[in-house]
Image 1 (cartoon, rainbow, N blue to C red):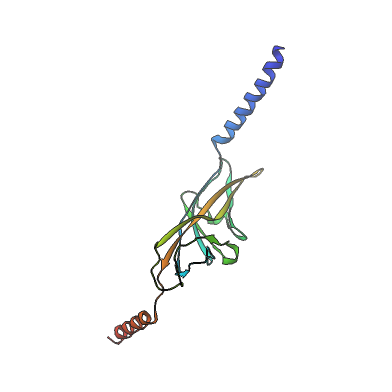
Image 2: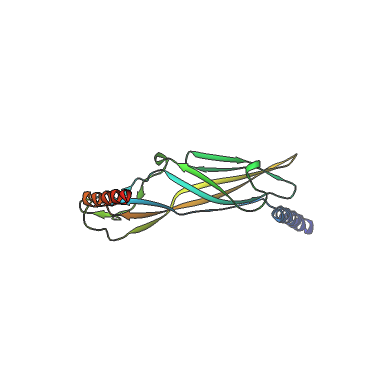
Amino acid sequence: MNSLFTTPLTGSCGLLLLFADLNLHASELSVTSEVLQISITARNAGTKALRLPELQSRFVLTASCDVGFEAETVSLGIADSRKAVSAAEIPAAGPFELTLTVPATQVGPVAVHSFCATASGVGAAPHESSLLVPAVVSAQLALTCANASDRRITYVSESVDVLLICEQERTDSDTDMSDSRTDTAAAN
């Protein structure tokens, strides 16, 4: 009966040591994304959702592989948009940047309720001038590390936030005044 008790314990301890050893020299992929700023004009109050334009997302990454492994690729995906960089483009140490453009058709509408809304879509100033919309899209990143006999992949997800800026719609008189100032400056 004693041997039945110690056999499972030894097996469990062996597994714990195996997992602990794997984490001592694990590959690492860290990522941060910038908050995207998008300007919108006042819109009708009845509209509760907003379609965003294409998103130009910028990420700062740091990638390192296990001892004895070399970085092979880093891939980035948002919706159906993808980008991959090869080993030659991945620095041995320090951060590097990746950008990815996501077409508007791959970004779902965001709920904004009454943000930047007026009764007619023009005229009275909206109450808020900006609105942070968290996690509009999610970026999936993967670091592939390899040596002569093995390949390992490390996955990371990063949410991309959007800051909507409510811009007042310019009237024809604003446009005329700015055009005349431009003409005057060009003449001098």
